[in-house]
Length: 425
Picture 1 (tube, helix red, strand yellow):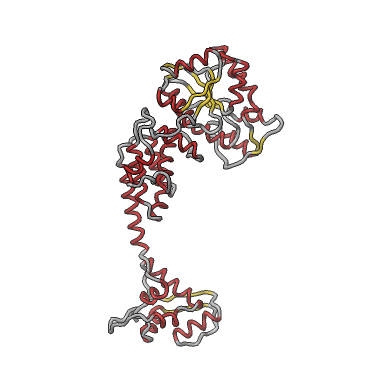
Picture 2: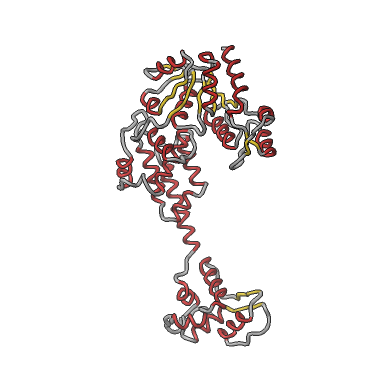
């Protein structure tokens, strides 16, 4: 028998449908019928429930006018259910009955097709940007399309935000003109809402892209966010992001002169993002050494003075100012020698430095780690584990020992390296 009855017109009687199919004992039946309808499957077969309770068997018997039986396997013919609904003038078919109980039936296939179409449209839109040939932009598009960001925003009804993020990136002023616009003006120009870059999902998308462009981690503080906006030419406090250096010589006025004067006296010097944006520098160093602790910079200044090789300190996670200076070093032809903590975060930073700066690990080998953990007061490793592609045995040994070593505990050996390089220079 068909699940619908074209012989005469019939409207749905919600009360009757509720009495016939709305009991908790028949919810499994209604749910499975809805599932078939949503998936576009036929509803002219039989549904079976294994392990049916006595109350479920009785409810099915009442619906179909038969003896409940004693078997725990309950089979119900869907055409028989449709016939009973029609005979009782409750609903003309199963679709109407299910919708009367739980609302419209979704067309999952159509929804998936529409979602894929929208996903493809958005992806095509962002890939059409003039920035599409920039490696950082391509990495951003690839990341948000693969990590679920685009899918999540589309499901939440925020698909337009992805295109807006691309438009914001297109409109950013030249990075040699810091402060040439502000967030409300930029947001209003792209979205018509001057607060769009202060709240909601849009600023996070844009800042993710800017972090990739600058070669730093995704911002986790308001200070880092502000530094990224400043680096992109948007007004803000451009002295908050800084980088500590020692004996770094450079060309260019006036920043190069300041660096050279400080290096001549073997004195540490702090550069601000404002200075790096206003007067980009060209380094005059074949090699620069990178550390993570300011304690090493101070010790090097005290013990080695002006003879210490050029030293740049990240002071933990690389700031935007530090990233800008390191990029200038690579662009000037300097080789970057990188040291960090023996921690999972330290391994992650070293990986990024190798990838983005072609850095050479400096005392970041398994042998250096083994020598380091022989000392007292070693710190337990915390956080997400990382790999060490430049020396796979290092990460494996760290996992086995579960111990980390901060750079401050390794100053003596690092100073020996710097002294040797200074003497040979």
